[in-house]
Length: 91
Image (tube, rainbow, N blue to C red; front, top):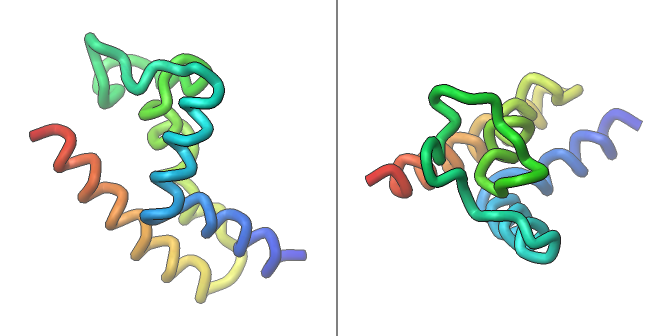
């Protein structure tokens, strides 16, 4: 139950989560990002349109959805990496 749910959510985070997000987005023919506001600073994320929006709509929020303390700690570590990735994109 809860451990399996945490494992599934952890698979969506970190380096593998980044690869998965862009792979799925590409297969669904989504744009990589919104040209006017790629980081959702002044709009609601629309992950049906842009892959990068999925980070803001769901992925970066998964830590709070974890069931176990161990999963929360690992999610925090992986989300930190994802935020570093996003910071690099912003450069």
